[in-house]
Amino acid sequence: MAKELGFVMITPHSLRKSRTGGIIGRFSRIEGLEFVAARMFGPSQELVNLYAESLLANPDIGGHRRPILADYVKRAFSPEPETGGTHRVMLLLFEGENAISKIFEAAGDFDDIKESADTVRGTYGDCIHDVDGEIIYFEPSVLVAPTAASAKQTLSLWLKYAEDDGGIITNALSLPEEDVQKTLVIIKPDNFRFPNSRPGNIIDLFSRSGLRIIGSQVHRMSMAEAKEFYGPIQAILREKLAGRAIETACTTLEETFGFPMPEEVCAALNQTLGPYYGDQQFFGIMQFMTGLWMPDVPEEELENNGKASCLILVYAGINAVEKIRTILGPTDPSKALPGSVRKEYGSDIMINAAHASDSPESAIREMEIVKPSYNALKKWIEQYYG
Image (cartoon, rainbow, N blue to C red):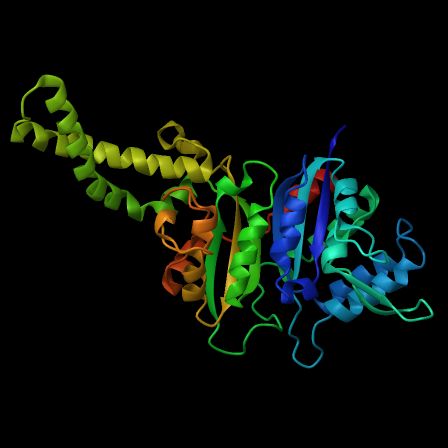
């Protein structure tokens, strides 16, 4: 069976309540699906109205559900009339066989009166009725498509507004009015080797910061981006690791040949083996982030997307950098405190679950490299739906 492209739309209420991680974790662990794209929206009134109208006219949605969904979208997605502040909506794309039906089944029915937590809506949504059966409170937590035709209709519409209404949402209603600081988080490729809930679990830990996610993107880092992003540490690795490499080499040579290594031999190794060892460690970092071995990548392919996926998130709020770094923990997971991201999910100083900017200036530099505002939806939606 051919692959499909399905979507999950996380509602403003779920984002405000920091349910984002739990929801992403539930969908990203579905066997046979690959998490391929994400984008944050601050939908305009025009987009909200058109989306509500499309739901109201969609024959694939049960007749009694159409007005409920349309009214909900107008109420929950519309910008604040007086200030123009927008509500955040996160759009996720998943690719795989039977993607649309798998997503629809995992989301569950929003009007299920049975107590159940085996679906996303059963856990995070609400549909409360009065004694006469009328709905008095409705929060679906996510919106999904029941059919491929519905997916095409919704994604084609949102793609038209992806540039104007999407990207880094700086006018979100839930942000503080002043002293807003932005920071970058990269959930690293080791969390995407197979379908699992780790990306969502990591986001859940970061939610303790009280910050808001204002940008998101699934990204395959190119070798050119990796070189620019991590380039400053190459010289540091050469310097810091040279001594360790020379000490190990000289000890091994002395044990092998049975005599102390002359100073000139150690000095020669320091000039040759030391930098080479540092470069090999640097190439290992590049390979981890891109899935490519740097010396093997031709010049003309440096700008091509790599083979390893990561999830880029932009957080905003007061003291964002410090709050995220505290929850993340130190580079070496063995030195991290229990409950931190790296203690829970890191293995060593390279496979340490996530990256976070160490200063506001670094956040600006790093965002300029990986471009979290780039519209990555376009390629996927046009590939499947024209």
